Amino acid sequence: ADVITGADVLVTQLEQPMAAALRVFESARAAGVVTVLNPAPAAPLPEGMLALCDYVTPNETECEALTGIAVHTEADAAKACDALREMGVRTPMVTLGERGAYLADVGLIPAVSAGPVVETTGAGDAFNGGFAAALAEGMSPAEAARLGCATAGISVTRAGTAPSMPIRAEVDALLARMG
Image (cartoon, rainbow, N blue to C red; front, side, top):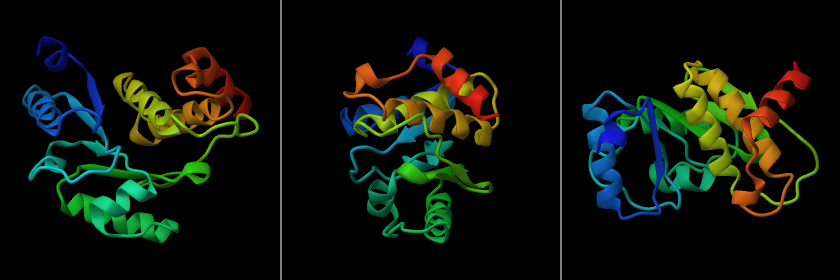
C-alpha cells in the first residue's frame, strides 16, 4: 500500500484479478496518484472502475470492447474517447499501432518509427511504460504520448516482449534524431 500511495503514477493492466486492479486504483485515487489503465486483455470492468482512471489507453480492439465503437479512423477514435470520457475517464487515449495514438483533446500523436518491424508483441506495454514514466517526470500528456510512441517504436524492432523493451537513453536518442 505504501508503494502505491507514494507513487507519482500508477499504471496497471488486466492480467491480475479484477478485484486487485480495482483496489489498486481506489488506493491510488485516494492518495492523489495519477492512474493509467491499459485495459489488456480486454475484459468487462467493474462498475466505477473507469471513473478511477486519469488515463485509459486501449488499442482498437480493447476500445471496441469497452465502448462498442469500432475504431478504424481518427474520427472513430475521437468518438470512442468521448464515450470513454462519459464513462468517467478523465483523459482517454486510443493506441492505433503503426498510426500512433489518439489523445482526447489533442488528436493524433504520430507513431515513431525506429526501423523495420520484427514483432509487435509487447508494443502496448512499451507504450504504457514510456507514457507513465514521462507523466511521472512531469511531461504533458501529449509529450508523454510521444515518448510512449517512441518507446513502442523501438520495441517492435526487436523480438520478444521483455527483451524488446528499450532503455531510456535509446528512446531519448531516437526522439533527438527526429527533432
